Image (cartoon, rainbow, N blue to C red; front, side, top):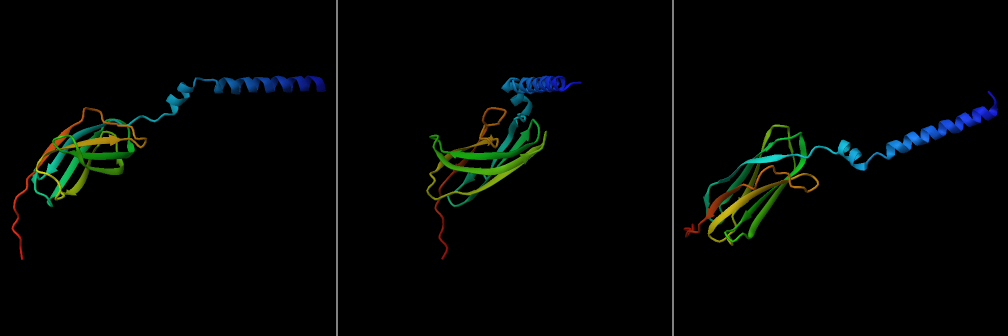
Length: 159
């Protein structure tokens, strides 16, 4: 082969490689993103429980929720509990970070809240929301709620 033929062969090879690389890059972005995107967790809140159901200010209330993972392993979940009064006003929010749940597994998350003296008597609702690490809500059903009541009584002072 002559130098001219080798030179032309090199140019043709370079063009073929450039076209192949361009064709791969020209694939629709959505196709590349779908292939690379991890499955979103799908969490179902199975239970919300408050213990005891009737408390007084300065009592300790235990709030717990059990959730079930309906998808692949979910890591980095944020579980948030919101306590609202009868008027819908938020009186307490608590979060637990970096919760992981295996596929088809249940996870229980607990909080302990000492009821402040400023809390009024009445019935309060508790809601649980679960977010993925990006802040997207990942609950698979409508919001569940649980209720507890605060009742003030005269406490006998101990001297």
